Image (cartoon, rainbow over all chains, first blue to last red; front, side):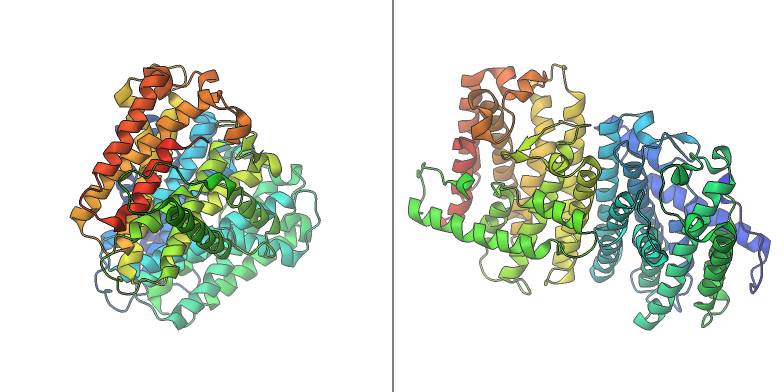
Amino acid sequence: MSQTSPPTSQSNLSHSSDEWSSWVSTHLLRIESALNQALPVTSVKPERLHSAMAYAVNAGGKRIRPLLVYAAYELKDQVTQGVTDTTVDQTAAALEMLHTYSLVHDDLPAMDNDDLRRGKPTTHKAYDEATALLVGDALQTQAFEVLANLDAPAQIRIDLVKELASASGSTGMAGGQAIDLQSVGIALNRAELEQMHRMKTGALLAACVRMGAILAGLTDQQKKSLDQYAQAIGLGFQVVDDILDVTQDSQVLGKTAGKDADADKPTFVSLMGLENAQTFANDLNDQALKALDAWGKEADSLRQIANWVTSRKH
Amino acid sequence: MSQTSPPTSQSNLSHSSDEWSSWVSTHLLRIESALNQALPVTSVKPERLHSAMAYAVNAGGKRIRPLLVYAAYELKDQVTQGVTDTTVDQTAAALEMLHTYSLVHDDLPAMDNDDLRRGKPTTHKAYDEATALLVGDALQTQAFEVLANLDAPAQIRIDLVKELASASGSTGMAGGQAIDLQSVGIALNRAELEQMHRMKTGALLAACVRMGAILAGLTDQQKKSLDQYAQAIGLGFQVVDDILDVTQDSQVLGKTAGKDADADKPTFVSLMGLENAQTFANDLNDQALKALDAWGKEADSLRQIANWVTSRKH
């Protein structure tokens, strides 16, 4: 939880800093509890796989994706028929499990070969490669299973499954990772780099917002403006990641710093320089906030998340 | 298609051998066409990933899982509201994609480390490990996406997603694989070996039958008797696999023969001997056929598949 310190920027917000801190704490408690309920019980066979799944999920992430679900859900005018707080909690948990699967697989020796994640041994280091492979596989399945079994009308559940699948497959997250792997040592231009990150990170972040919006019963028009918000923070998140990779040390990041530059991977910093990358991150934050202009204070949690994403230090 | 030669046993069947051959050919054409439509277009980015997904799916499998969907669907009394032949084709394709994902990951160096599958280089040999990892990941996602986008009522779609997820996750297929990995060099008893295979192979085969039954609009009672059929052929499939592993050479099998024995993995042959394993396979075939006693000739395709599974030579 120490990794989720709220941002200091308070411009254009009716939320006070205390209210935001309290919102974050409340929703972090909800997501941790929902995740523990959504994970298979570790005393059930195969115990080692189930314990490794829990290890991966409980490695202390920022939980940005679940928080986006909660924040988007706050835009509701009224309670959607058949949707309860539990429905929202479980949807948020499904998204974090899907995200965790991607981290576990990305860390494998055949991919990024990372030993540390959030300051802890990666799943294949704490267990073994075969188990980490199955952890990722089973977490992906579990994410879909949780959505399919939500306490919500079938139409809402199927809409959520569609969003998650379309964001995470070969033209979304997994596809972005494939392009990333092929880009080592290749000079991507900015449009190509943005496209890669839109798929690799942006698509799932956008899905979080859209899935919160589905639970909130928003219109297609409303969802569209939220897409602009999500695309901006998705890209902003990556730009800041690239900045932190060169400005912070491994201990602060909880993962190996300088890795992208070492691997000769294209980054926003290598492409546009540190200062321009920082300006770009700020521009993206402005774009995200602008996309929320039609909303009042009910969108303040989304605004806070945008500020946090682009001002974070780890 | 040469790998799908129909069985010779015709006991208790009103189907002639020609009718069965023709049924298999017709449905293989349907599934190949459905798979090609369900796969991402290889000219779309990321092209290499999409080409590798097609490579894995088109490596010439027996297509038993899709055939089970079609065969179970034939038990319908009348057409289910909102379900068309296309719905059935796409459901069958989703199951084959899910199965292919598991093969691609199982073949990876961290798991079974197999160079050959169905006589061709495995996906990580034809491409590379990172791509094969993503192929499996994306095929799993694609399977759920196809089901979520079926032309069928939302309730049917969500029921299908539930079945697929519950069969393939950590208490189904992926869990069985985890137990298998932990069992190298360990003396499992017969109950433990059966349990492992029920999860690793049986759960997904049973899901094929259940998903065909969902599309056919069958009652829970009817589905229950089909579960007994599916459990029996699932186990039968594995017993025959173990028999073929010691009696056939690699060329006939299209994969490395003798591998399980070499790896000191428990098998039905190592546990009960070759002759008893063959008797057990025949018993399981009888059990499968008995579970279909309540059905008339509409269950003949299911009966043929049971005979085929337990009498196959590769």
